[in-house]
Image (cartoon, rainbow, N blue to C red):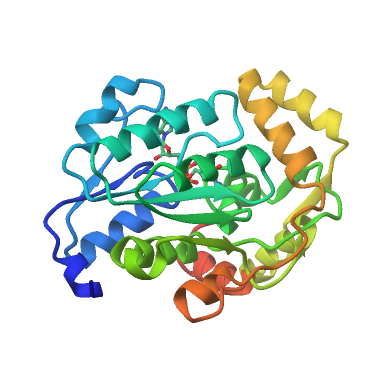
Length: 278
Ligand SMILES: NC(=O)c1ccc[n+]([C@@H]2O[C@H](COP(=O)([O-])OP(=O)(O)OC[C@H]3O[C@@H](n4cnc5c(N)ncnc54)[C@H](OP(=O)(O)O)[C@@H]3O)[C@@H](O)[C@H]2O)c1
């Protein structure tokens, strides 16, 4: 099947997490190409309410699956097992799963999707550059000081626009991208202090990285009244996933799109010009 054949297919592509960092970029690109899409939003689709899934799956040809909040949280594996089974029974032909690099729980979810029956594509992504410009660290950067307990660990930050482009390519061309596991990273390893200095350079402002002892950081989150499950997830991401295991770059963007991944400087320039930190 050619690219344009799948673009014209009237059966919609289901997009889960359609208001999220990757889902909304994917939806925008597909909509612009005139592709039929179905955007899943709460309350119409809720991971915690399996009785909402059938109506979303009915008649869809394929799905982009971004789990929330993270494939590493308790219960995600069971939920993904049930969802993948139901998607196969509903007749979907292709599942594109957003996964997290360095998370054994996410890899267990990958296997469930790989074994569900439909064609599959796995997007195993590193830490998003947009965590610096959107909800996670965007406010702290706007305020000019970013407290973090992350020391010198380096991460190959990936641009969510690259993830979206790989997802769109996969969704429109399952014949080419089915059966592929793409490790999606940026082209370089950067520490968090270096990334924040790069944002400061793009903005021509001083943005301070403030190194905080881990336990002080998590205690401050608790004092702010953040939910215990959220603190546990951030602790897991900061102390386990960001322990240096992901200190390598991968070639997933190049393999999927035939071009290199965007650099952190590409991202900071575009985000600053778009007013992300204004
Ligand atoms: N950020 C990173 O650096 C990173 C790196 C690798 C992998 N990931 C993976 O990316 C995934 C998140 O994708 P994203 O960053 O594109 O999204 P996101 O920006 O985190 O937004 C979450 C999305 O999920 C939806 N959502 C939240 N709770 C839901 C529920 N109970 N049922 C159904 N939908 C729900 C939200 O919709 P509403 O709130 O509008 O309902 C929103 O569309 C996670 O699985 C995470 O592990 C993230």
